[in-house]
Amino acid sequence: MIYWHLFLAFFIPNIIGYGGGPAIIPLIEAEVVGRYGWMSGQEFAETLALGNSLPSPIATKMAGQVGFEVAGIGGAVAAVLATVVPSLLLMLGALGVLYRYRNSPRVKRMSQWVRPVIAVMMVWLAWSFFSEGVDSAGILHTGVIGTSAAIALLCFRVHPAFVVAGAVIYGGLFLG
Image (cartoon, rainbow, N blue to C red; front, side):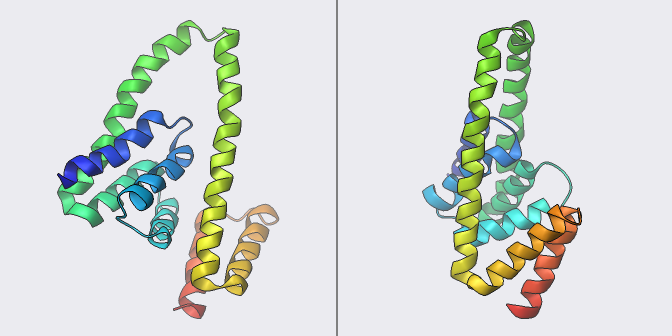
């Protein structure tokens, strides 16, 4: 039964999510943390941080990691299949329809309405991670890491993988 639950936990966000991996992360979190309780919010944030530091699509990395932690190799396979196969099938089906009506005003309006929804979901996810950081590390450490990351990314254009590595090192030195 656990394989079926893992399949559903990743199948549903991938079917209803629009906009790729970053857009479905809040939906995956709702399933993994909220609905099934397989991870705490902090564990999910750490898994996401690790997944962001590695190459390849974030959704499949998250599925593999969560599936493996919950039910071993079989769980990882079930979660990754739930992530990849439905998206592939829907993409092939939708591609034909969207290509046929690509100049339609309705299709263009649909795309314009989806973007703000994704932005709101990303803000909610960022606020959720900030709250988890304050709860677990305190406002000082969360502020230092957040401010340093923002300066490194925006002012110095440091690659995000190096920013994540720096935050991990900081955490190991001052929070370990």
